[in-house]
Amino acid sequence: MATTITTIKKAKLGEQDIYFDVDGTGSTVAVPTSDGNTRTSKKVNASHIPSTSTARAKNRIGSGTPASSADDVDGHLQEVYDDLAKIGEPDDSTVAVSAGQLIVKSGGITSTQLGSNSVVTAKIADDNVTNAKMAADAVAGSASGASGDNCIEAASISATELAADSVVTAKIQDSAVTNAKIADTTIKAAKMVDVPTHYVIAEDVSSTDTGTAVLSFTTSATINANDLVIANIDSFGTGPSQQIGPVVRSGANAFTITVNANQTAGTTTAHVLILKAVST
Image 1 (spheres, one colour):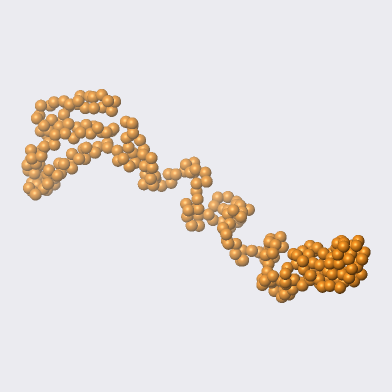
Image 2 (cartoon, rainbow, N blue to C red):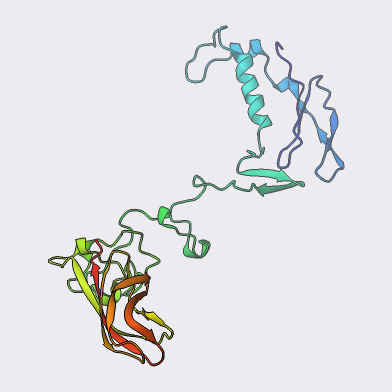
């Protein structure tokens, strides 16, 4: 024969070793087994495999005419032998051989192997269905407002679920923004309608300084550098009897008044007006 293939030998799990008896003697061969031993197997009589010339002489199936010399019979036979060699061979993608056992490879099961509707709820780990896995419009509201499947439960949307800047004006009910919802120092004059440019803070303050004619007063309100402070003494302690100097800011919460004599005892009280500019 034009092409002689003596053996097609396989040793992987799930395959059968094939040996060809090329001399027609019907001889045997020792074939390795998966447990490390051998078994005796008869060789296939190669005389039953047609030669190239014999194969060409055969009529094509259904045609009634011999194959032409241009037909690649050798190639066709080689394809047959190659197919035999692959019988039972793992694809090494989905399944593989490990320690003499046929196993499913790690990551070998893909969407190709999964049938439609084959993944049931029990096979999905908790907290593993993320937003990216959900199709658009997958979660629908309930027209009747009832709880159940495909509905967002009442009071289940908290601050954690709301994205930054997700609540727009149209989503806020009228009169729903109360004083408790507004942070301190949040609203500026530019955001208010018909607001005056200045406002006044009035306080009653006192000084117990002694041995000085420059009396210090402390306020609870902050006095900024550009605020206007007006004070008038209501009563004097022991010593002074008249206010003779201007009111002078001496700190963020303090001012002084000069009187006509040192205060030796007692308390001098005053009423103060702080004119403050409205912050814009």
